[in-house]
Image (cartoon, rainbow, N blue to C red; front, side, top):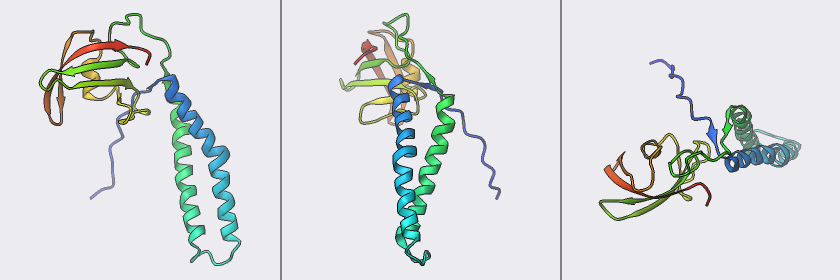
Length: 167
């Protein structure tokens, strides 16, 4: 069995200004606060002597590896991103960054979601990636349009109730 893995499918480079700021703030926090703090604790633990049985040293080194991994990811990803700050010319249609209110025709359930980039999805806020089947089905639709979406639970039909570009 080989270790070959096919290259990952490139992610969408789109991001909202808020999402970009969150990633920049995370990068800044990791570089200026978290990494120096962990480095200091690792050096203090190393000064205590035997490193092979020093849990603080071992855990600190592991934390440094995780922080460095995240820093490398952010430093590589941030230049690739394209911030979408302008609103579309047709504010009635659904595009990137839109807040959409939907009603499930079968259940009457109301869904409120926002279409964002893959780096800023948040299920708690109902922010979905532009790469999801739901977002792809919604793109370019307007109010009162019906949308058929293939979901893991089965096919569902929604009606677009509202489209906004500011919450």
